[in-house]
Structure formats: C-alpha cells, structure tokens
Amino acid sequence: MRDLTVPRRSLLLGAAGAAGLAVAGGPAGPAAAGGARPPLWKVARDRGIAYGSSIATWQFDDDYPALFAREAKLLFTEDDLLWYRVKPAPDAPLDFSYADQIIAFAEAHRMRVFGAHLVWDEGFGEGWPEDYLWSIDEAEARELLFGTLTATVRRYRGRVDAWSVANEVTSPEGVRGFRTDVPWWETIGPSYVAEAFHLAHRADPRALLVINEFGFETVNEWGDEPEPRRRATLQVIDQLLAEGAPVHALGVQAHLLADRFAERFDGRAYTRWLDRVADRGLQILITELDVLDDGLPAEVGPRDAAVADVYRRYLDVALSHRAVKAVMTFGLTDRYTWLQEDQPREDGAARRPLPFDEDLRPKPAYRALSRSLAAAPRRRPLWTLPAPR
Image 1 (tube, rainbow, N blue to C red):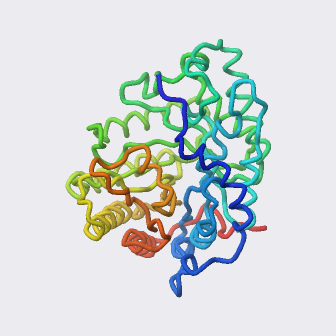
Image 2: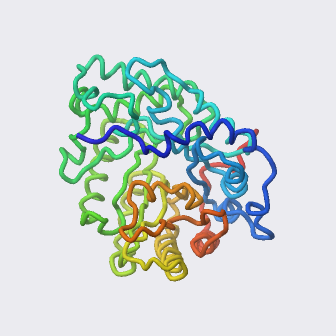
C-alpha cells in the first residue's frame, strides 16, 4: 500500500496561489527578463521541440510566474489537477477552481498544456482515509475513478493539449508488466488502464494521451536497474495497443541520479530503447526532468557544474532521437523543487536540481539545457508554439 498524501509544503502554501494570480500576468522583472538571451522555448521551437515545465498555483509568488511565462510555452500542471485539489475527500464535490486558474494562466501566456495525472495511486491528500480506496467495491471504484476522469477531461476539452492518463502503472515485478500494488488493480481489475485511455479519448478525441513512467536511465537511488523497467513498460504498451487503447505517447520522467551518471548511463542502449518505443508508433515526451544531486559535493560551484554535466550528457542522447518531441523540467527554480522536501540531502545542503536557483538566476544547468536544445536535430513538431489564441 502506498502513501496517498501530497507534500505538506504544497498544502501549506496553497493559499499563495490566489495572491500570486494577481501578478502572474504582469511584466517580467529584472530576474526574469534575462537580458538578450533567447528563452528556452524559442531555442527548442527552432528544432521542432516543445519546451516547458511544471508549475502550480501555490507557486505563484511575486516574481516566479513572470520567469515561467518567459521561458516556457508548455505547462505541466504539477498539482492543480491532482485529486487533493479536484476531489479533496471521498464525499467532496468536484472542485476545479485551482485547475481553472492554472489553465487560465497558461492561456493568458499562449502556452500548451500537459494535464497530470488522471490515473495515479498518489496525490490524494489528507482528506482521504488511508485504506479508503482499498475498501470500496468495483462499482464504487469505477464511478469514482472513471467519473472523475471523464468530468475532468470534458471540462477542459480543447484546452488541454495532452493528458498524462496513466502515471506509474508499470513494474518489473508486476503481472505482464503492470503494477498490482495499486487500489484500482484490486478493485476494478487489470482493464482499468486501457479503460482510462478509451474514456479520455472519448471525452476529448483531439488530446494527446500519454502513459507516464520513470526509471529508464540508470540505476536509481534504491539500486533498481533500468532495463527491467524498460521491458515492463514496453510490455504494458504492447498490451494496451493490442487492446486498441489510444495510447499516443510515452512520458519519460527522467529524474536523473547524478551519482556516477557518466559511468552508469549507457547512451547507446538508451537510444535503442527509444527506437523500440518509436517503432510502436508512439511519440516521446520528457516530462519531469531534474537531477538528484546525491554523490556530489555540497560546495555550490562544483555541484552546479556536475549537475549541468548530467543535463548535457542525458539531453545530447535523448534529443538525438527525433521521436522526442517535448522536454519539460520538473520546475524551473530550486525554490520549489520537490526533492528538497521528499529527498533532502544527508549533509543538509539545499538541493540544486533545476535550471534556475532560488533567486531565479540562471545556473550552469540552464546553459547546458539551452545548448543541448540548440544542438538537437530538427524534427516535425507536435504543436504550433506559442499556442493560438
């Protein structure tokens, strides 16, 4: 059984979203203006790549939204479409007030939207009893999961360009590649993933539908090797496609582990795996890119340089494949990285996994990201950027 809560920091800062909206559409301040450098989305667009990042309304402070609006034209809805926002308790009515705000922010800045996540076993929040989802019967589970999914996609039909329909549903230890330690598997059965894709497609036939997964790059911080995860994910994709499920793309989370990355990352094997995904007719999106800086010194200068080197090594390989159509970092600034709360460093040093520091100054990771995007081979884009009004 897995934790159904969300990070406490998100809940405590949730009220900040309303205040931040007052400045979200305003002009960029000095930190966001960036001088003469082109924003990341323009660098990426020139190569046929959509660049974006995750953001949530609770992160709408005095200056970050302006930086985000400058650098990104693809918005990943980090929190505001999760269940703790949309349905904060089993008996609560659907609440789209936060989602409406984040979608409005994207539209005001002509961004494409990547909605996350329709089916996941986390993100429920403190209003959900720990055992609730495991205790309901099949009919209740279907109404809860599929009713919420359908209502959400219908509400934003034509306004959300891509949906993370199923997030983290694969496992090398599962059944035919599927995880079984999730309540939807226990209550609805193995068909719940395919059914979710069919229902999302019915609610918005034009949206790009994505299965989103992690753990493909190197051995992770728990010692898991990437190849079994790659095989399991392909097995699940094959099963879904055989059932006629409208799976259009694979989302590659790309939470990278800095520790011995150059030694552990096999670029050739990774490219061959991307080939296998593309051979199945799927687009590929990098959805949650950041770098866990374990194994690096606490000193900022050497650590930032090493994190930038991980970005460069990974993106030079991943972006060499033309099926990779989008790159989203999991946040733009270290000010709001999930890693600081969920996986703090043992030495107490603040995590530095993202392109901008806590004061919104570009770091070596920013320059590595920009250079890798600029050097990528051209490809046919998924979308026109910026989004049409």
